[in-house]
Length: 359
Image (cartoon, rainbow, N blue to C red; front, side):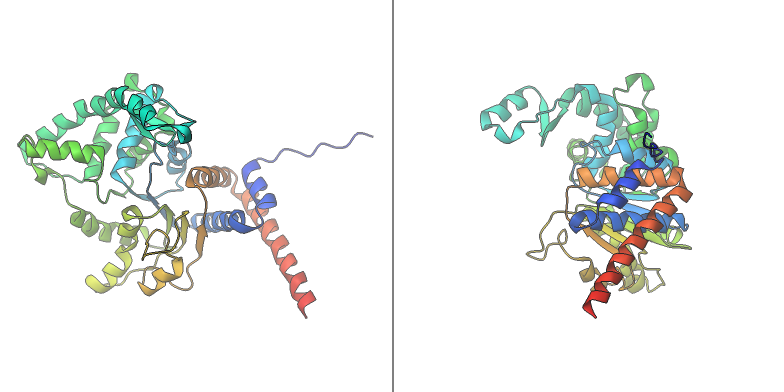
């Protein structure tokens, strides 16, 4: 008698994680994933902080559909991640990858420079097809704003830009452009330290030449003042969680909104309802990136009851995996609930056995 084939799961990634990710960083990822789903399934919101060069690493493949699915409700990103999302949309086919970059010499990288490519680890952004092509659209926007006296946040210029690009100029898949998804959803976003980006430098040059006014871009202080109001909206009901990739200003800027509302505005603020950080930074020299979540309790950013997770791993591996599983959950919530319930019950039984042996 032939064995009966097991029916294929409609949630293969979630099922795989629940059965295989039992210890160490894999367990931290599993628990963070389950808690993320619990939070949004219950009506909560999730705010993402994205550092590094995740757009160049094509995080948009999973982040864009997650935004469309209502799994991400606000963003804090570096200026580099903001602009590199557009670059992937308009210049994807012109990127060049360097999988053997670890063995490059200085001469090898000089050759890449002469090819007008800007290497980011194992890939590279094409100068002419990306930076210069976008510059032709963005700089006139700045000049018009200077002439009219218009003032906007940094991301608002990029929202207008990405929505204005003619699809015939796409080289990348628009369904994989997280900035396009965010712009269409009118997602709340902050870009702290946007001056530290290529287009921040380009903007500064036009200010220096007196072709653009620095005042057309609202400041980081204005970003925080606006975030006060955005946070109050996001944190209603079940609250808003904080999902952080890497560290630095992309994470530290928005998470400070809670204590600032409390101590500086002297108003009530719901605490962050969830916290997860994917980082491989070590805790040293007062590092924010490597600080444990407990330290944030002392700054009144989190509480002892906040679900907290640290996944000490590579975000280019972990974030797409978690997002893929969450997209499965969104498509089949009842099936996801059943898998998560069974996984938690299995863990509970294992712990009960350990307790029994210890008696």
